[in-house]
Length: 370
Image 1 (cartoon, one colour):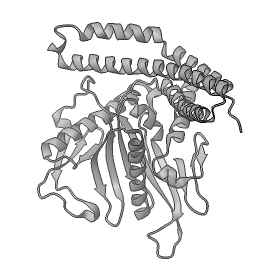
Image 2 (cartoon, rainbow, N blue to C red):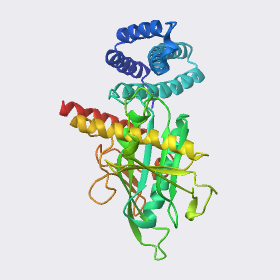
Image 3 (tube, rainbow, N blue to C red):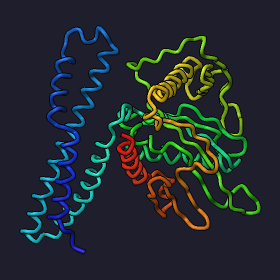
Image 4 (cartoon, rainbow, N blue to C red):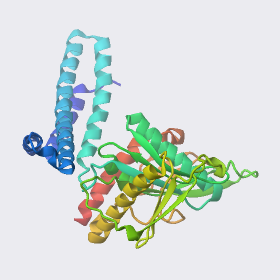
């Protein structure tokens, strides 16, 4: 089937126009000029926290402007390429134009979704915690499958990740794991992944080969920044140290370097064991604790931010996505109705379709509530 390049390019231009309207390029350029003036001030680094905030905002604003302008240039270049190919009846050039159209369509769609991420913390990096729920050893195995899925998703995009804590289950899989994805808008994208995930399959741990349903909870919080004002009095924290362990409970560290931090007023618990020293684990735990308390504080201050983390039970009745491997194969998001049949691809990190659908659904919910 021949590609209607004229219509496809027209659609791309229409989408880019809506992106420009939402972004307000004039305001973005003004912001860049203002931040450049601030970053050039001779006394900027007298206040390192403020300096870091200014330089980070400037970098993000420049990247956003370059991304939009670069996309406009690609659309124009594609139009020229198509004209050349059609005038000369060059099949190779036409094939090149079709590949660029596919790549550009995907990039513009991603940019359009990015414009929907306008929440207070959407630009932040993300801290993801996965916990095994109901379902015994299958649930622990499912928690490990989900962790791999998100890390593979990050790897596909070239996003840096850091595993901060892993608590292994006795027989197989994970009781819980916490990792960081340190890239702008990681929180905005992954926040729609928060909730209860449900797996249906023939259990590899059941010697009678019966079908098993298991659950895992995914929590996503924005990574705390130095400019956030979250002070935790020391008398509100209980610090326990213990020896790091590997799969099956085996010891992987001969010293008590792992840290479990409990915020006494709220009961929030954070464990860290993947850094080399107790001091490093304590610092990492405090940062994640501050991130979670920041979310909790905002939830208490404003009900409209209730979507940030939420109370995730990881059991029957409150799942947001199902992964069915038997008797048929399908992954379906119960909020957006988005579904795919290629379960292996999804569990290998191909979740952009779910994230895009989730972001659009979330924005729609916000419009209804406003």
